[in-house]
Length: 281
Image (cartoon, rainbow, N blue to C red; front, side, top):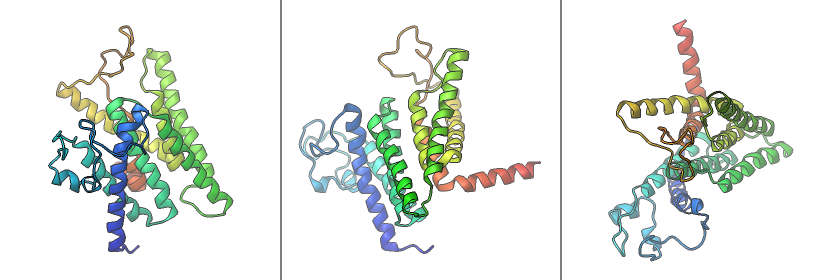
């Protein structure tokens, strides 16, 4: 496949622009606010952000990370999300070119990024984002099937993947609750893995889970070794709850990282692993 320089630049700018919108989604959706109105404004002085101060990454650098009006520090999270958006916009173009598949997985990837940052900050999974991802994830393959268009994933693989993703986490939750009376994972994890299964199929869901568990374990072990402890920040956790004061990590970001790894490199990683195991034998 040959790549067009103008399309490469366009994909980077397109991803960065949507990354800027994701910042609005990440900050407003957990509070139940509209992502359309009012326009972006400084949370401190309430002044509306001018278009020339809202250019992804560049405006942050020009303003040196401060509001033009009140000089309040702007979180580094904003340019980070915009940068990730630019990288993902480019990665999707390189993987799918500008096709229907590009737009389909653009929705998936950017929805996943929003969920990851919201879970990191609030330990929650907004239903509105999950529902939107589920509708797009099932509707596009369904329409493609009836139009006899050979799509990247067919509707039956998508449906089975969604069910397998949800059932896998559900079984883990139920077994842990029965055996150890603790919540090893949350139902939000089940819904997210179900969405991953819709877009990547059952194989993608299970592989993404494997990737995420492996990476979460590495981070968790590292945190234990350096003595860093993060507890569940729920306000409604009672004193007698088994998870009270337990060391914990938000798992959804790891699930999402695993799903992106599978989307772009999954088959290569699996082929390398199976070849490695053959060599080992």
